[in-house]
Image 1 (tube, one colour):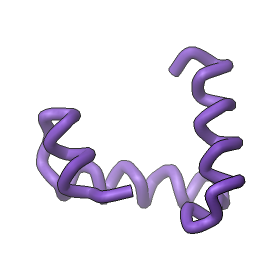
Image 2: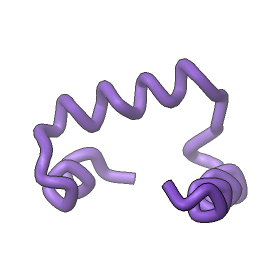
Image 3: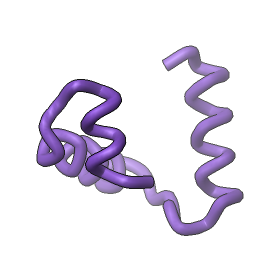
Length: 50
């Protein structure tokens, strides 16, 4: 849940992470502050093997 850590681990610029997350938020509505919603999103992505 930290842009800088995510950017570092993905070897991309922090602005790229922000842009990607904004794009996802535009496509689907997830409350990233709710741990249950984050868990559901993570499980869905693992199920889809993304």
